[in-house]
Image 1 (tube, rainbow, N blue to C red):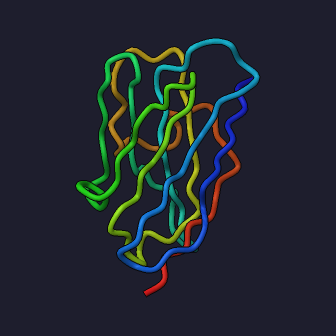
Image 2: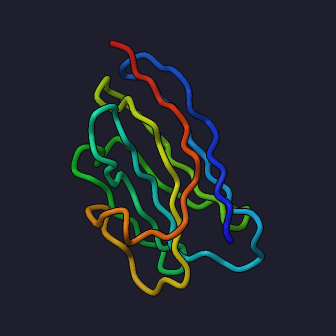
Length: 128
């Protein structure tokens, strides 16, 4: 089973930047699709950004377009989420997700059930 480990969460003032990282371990297989979700208290977990590393394509939730960037690290099975111009409403636990095999870009609007593997999450707090 794939193990996903997130890092890079923390606190930042509104307008600042954070960079989250997610590494998949316990597998030597390439994982073509990875994503970031987030869940704020009392709210459902929502997709933030997805990537298909084979196709080089990405998708974002409307709420983060132009501010967040998902990218693949040179290290195998590692993706980052660069969060710029953060807002208080970005505060949430951020989760990494993965899917393999995967032959297309999974839209960020697709729900959790599309993603079989999950990390434990990392807290992001944006203060005003």
